[in-house]
Image 1 (cartoon, rainbow, N blue to C red):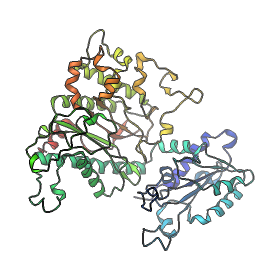
Image 2 (cartoon, rainbow, N blue to C red):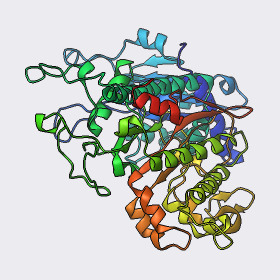
Image 3 (cartoon, rainbow, N blue to C red):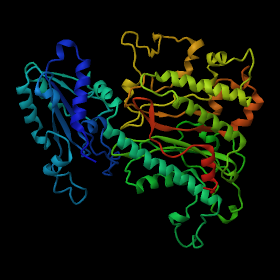
Image 4 (cartoon, one colour):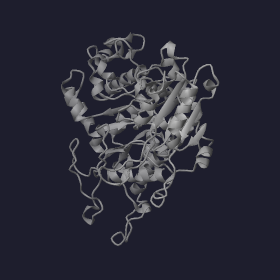
Length: 550
């Protein structure tokens, strides 16, 4: 690929920034001053932590060198409007560090590999800032929120120096929102990076499924000499959550992905009802397991356990890697035990979640408000539960009455999806626009109101945990991740078993499923959407792979 388009992102950010300024400030010179991430260390040790560049800094620089800085300038009505300046400052190689760590690139190499106006070392930053402020009197200097643990620390030396200049103002009020508005829609280069991350992660999900399937068909066996040597990758079995996670991460790493975009969620059995279950440390269920029972630690690889049969259950894997700092986010729920086939109850719930996702896909297009897609999922859940008998039907148990009660939030408590980009939960500041006067979320067709029309939109609890509440735009990348969960905590809090809408005896038959989630990443296009996730999710293919037939 060509160079990461950092200068294009700088210009886009400045354009968004100027829109946020008071009219009297919009024609002034605008200057950005940012610090990149530094290499962290475990507390009170010299052991380095894994380095990952701060997302906003990377967006404007394409630079993965720790301890770097950016100084950029823009002014409407001048040559800087179309071609902003962007000076990148990277640390110089330290002779004493080279034997321990890979040194930063030379200035010549960095100039060739980064889309910047100029590349230099940090000691020249203050001199460059002086020149810039002298050439642009009355400039506004913008930084990310200062004195915040959420962003790399910008040395006070630079901001104090800028404030000491005549007619120069320093503000951290506008830049973060401008950056997130710019990052909300992705350009073609960014979409290709997200596509690559999703392709790698899709293959990793399929690898886990195929290892499960080969074991069902006895395609994988513990090596005969396992007592005398470690198991080789071709002999690995998946009988624990940790083993599934290890194979997923190894598959991504083999293809060059350095980071996971978030902690993998690998939840077997009823643990799949915990949305962000990241323990990933339990065996698959081989005997009676109570909801959220973490006591099952028996090993399958001892001679006394070779005759044990894994109980029919689901394995929910929510995991995705990064590629060049751009994320993927994929969830697949697969059958374990039962010869690699879902139980009747698990298949019914899985098919309903898939129906919810397909109903969502059918709506996606620019201009559609995300709340409307969330609502359609709850409508679909109600129809499905009434077909299965979990929800009662009849004149007193209408869809509208169930929606208004908020009961469906006990089974589908989270939002349908979120923006995705360099961060898995991308641009949170602009993902839920609020009215500047009331502070209330803007409801489609109703404006900013403290309450919503429950007859139309259902109970407010259906929207409580949404990470995205705005109209879709072309170029946005979002996840579509409906789910159905039988969480003892949520069902108890909602008193679901006592609800007049629920047939408690039927509900009990489904509670052992635990949870099902299906998640794909899509980009919003001019006429609809494109799905960037390539691993399949239809029941026939999934069971075929997990049973070793395909």
